[in-house]
Amino acid sequence: MKKPYRIQLIACAIEQSPLAYPLGALCILTALKTNLELKDHIEVELSHFMGDQDDPQQAAKHIATRQCDLIGISLYLYNRAWFEEFLEAFQLESSSPTKIFAGGPEAGANPTQLLDSTINFIILGEGEESIIQAISLLLTGEEPRGRGILTKNSGEGPHHPQDLALLASPLLSGIAVPSEYDGVLWEMTRGCPYECAFCFESRGNRSVRNYPISRLKAELEVLIAHDVKHVFVLDPTFNMDRKLTIERLTLLRDTAPNDMHFTFEVRAELLDSQTVQLFAQLYCSLQIGLQSSNPTVLEQINRHFNAELFSKSIALLKKSGIVFGLDLIIGLPSDTLSSFKASLDYAITCQPSNLDIFLLALLPGTQLAHDAESLGLVHQKESPYLLEKSPSMNEEAITQALQLKEACDQFYTHGQAVMWFHAACDGVALRPVELLEAFIQYTGEFPIREEEDIFEVQDRFIQHLYIQQDCTSLLPALLSYMELHQGIIHLQETGESPVVSLYYDVDDLALLDTMHVKEFTRTYRAYEESIPYGIFMGDGTLYVEKIVGYP
Image (cartoon, rainbow, N blue to C red; front, top):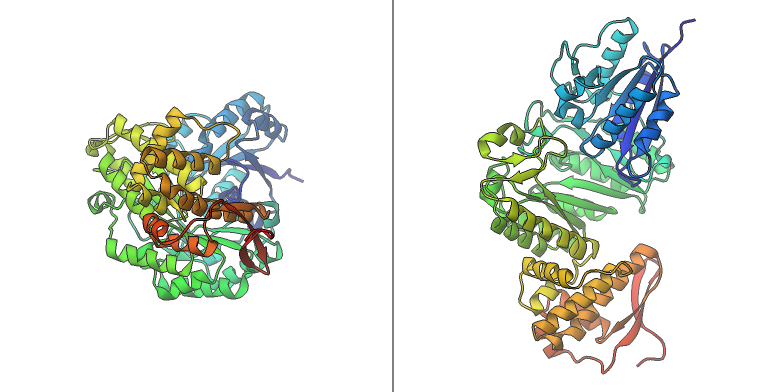
C-alpha cells in the first residue's frame, strides 16, 4: 500500500489571546480533511505556535523530525519575521525533500521574493479550492497550477470561492475545537463592496458572499456547546446589508448566552435605531473605522465622511449604552500633523471606550501601495511597510503623531479614561490633544515607575496639571470622579470589590457626566474629608455605598 502524502500546516499567532484562533489554517485543514477524493491519500496536521513564546528555530527542529512531503505556512504581516527564521532553520534541519507553500495576505504581498527563496508555490486569495487543486496535481507528480496558485513558472490571480455553502465548516466538521482557544474568529460574510485604498479589498475581486443562515445557526450551537466566551466576527463591514444585519443580530439575541461576548466591525453611517437596539440586547462591542475626520483626507482613500450623520450614529450608540471603539490612521495622503490632531480631538469627543491608532502601512496589493510613488509616499519596502514620510507629513511630524498615539494608548485606552476624560479637559480648558501633549511632557520629566499602575499615573499627572494651571479647587471633585470610575473598572476586571475615597456624594458625582466641573463645584459642597465607599455587584446590579460607620 502506497504511503500517504504527509502535509504539515503551520500557523503562528503573535501571542496567546482571544484573537489567536488560526481561522485561515483551519479552513485549509478542513478543506483537505473533508475532500472525498484526497482524504484517503493524504495525512494532514496543523501545528499552532505563539510568536512570543515559541522559538522559530526550535519549532523548525520539531517539524523537521516529522519528515513531511509538504509544509504549508499561514503568512501574515505580524508573523513574517518569525516564519523567515523558521524557514531558514528548517532548511538546515530537514533531511528529506520537502516542498513548501505559503498562504495568507502576506504571501501574496511580495510573492516573487518568496518564490526566489524556499517557497515552491503560493496560494493567492481564499485557498480552500485552490489547495485541493494543488495537492491533486502534486499526487500525480505534476507542478501545482490553476486558479489562485502561483509558482515560478505559472500563475493566475487570487481565487475567491463564489458559493460559500460548498465550503466545509471547521466548526461543524469537528476539526476546529473552539474550547481549545481563548476566543473564536467567526465569518458570516466574505468580501467587501467598498474600495478603501489602504485595504487589500481596494483592488481586484470585491464580491460579497454570505454564508447561509442555516450554517450560522449550526455553528453558533457549536460555540455555545463549547462554552466560548469571546467571538470576533470577521466581516469587514458587518452591517453593510441591513436585512442580513437584522436577521443575524436577531439570531444572536435569541440564541447566544448572556456571557458570550461578540466584537463587530461596523460602519457608523449605516447604523439606525433598529440595528442599534438589537446590538444593545447583546453582550458586544463595536469597532468603527473612522480613520480621519477630515473629508479631504478621506476622499484620497475613497472614503466619505458625513459629520452630522456620523455624530447621530454615535449618539445612538451612547444613548443605548453600547461599548464602541474608533480607529484612526496616521499619515494618509494629504493628512498633516494638524489635521491628524483635529481627527484625534474629534474621535475623543465621541467618547469611544478605546482608540486604536495606526501608522499607515503601504501593504503590497493595495491601491495606496500601487499609487505610493505618484503620491510621494515614502515607506519601508519590507514588512511591515510603514510610512516614513509624505509630502504633507515629514519624519518629525510622524514622530510627534506617534508620540500622541502612545500617550492615547496609555492614558486614554489602557487607562480606560473615557468616562472622565472630558471633565479633565474641561477643568483646565484644554482640547483632548492638548491634555495628551501635557501628559507627554509630564512623563518626560517624571517617568512612569515600574511598580506604578496606570491609575496612579493618571492621578499624579492630573494633580500636577491642575496645580500648574491654578485649578486646585477643582481637584476634590475631579479626583473623586476619576476614583469612582477607576474603582468600577477594578471591579469589572478582577471581580474584587474595591473601597474608594470620595469627597462628594456618589449620586452628585454622577452629574459630572454632563455638568462642567467648575459649575459642579459651585453647586455642590464637598465633604470636609474624603469618605470611603464600597463598590460591589449584587444580583447583576452595581452598587456604590458608604462604608458603615461614616455619616
